[in-house]
Length: 196
Image (cartoon, rainbow, N blue to C red; front, side, top):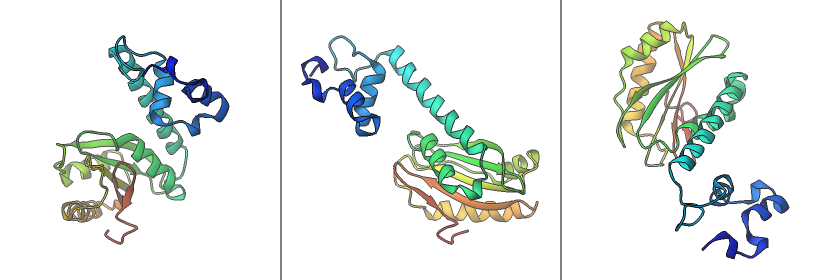
């Protein structure tokens, strides 16, 4: 159904003006960003140019969240950290294992995507994580990876690799503060569950 056939009070632009963006669905917000559809398709139909526009908007939002995260003390604002990781990794079609390297005062040195895998696994090599921690002169690290299935529940393998990384990093005096597992709507902290 074309937007022009909708009653005015139900059109996304009019609702945006009257009610604000927080009251619109994701689909309605995307329709507003795209502005028009592709001939023969609804407004949600997109071509290469509109797909690029959405990709640019997504990247800008990631950069905005990363900038806000870097400006704060991670331990004093775990919500900001979780929000950043959720926004960055929840829609990845493959597992991505990342390390957030920190100073002794827990300020961010660098976030690195260390390993990329398949739809349900990523090989993680403790030696490589130790090398990068030493390269960044990190004192602590927060580990994170996504579950493309959308379910953030940690597996036995997730717990095992966390303990292996904790032990390997402790030999060079780098503390593992947490391992966050990102699903579509939830982020699970292994530290909060007492699994580190």
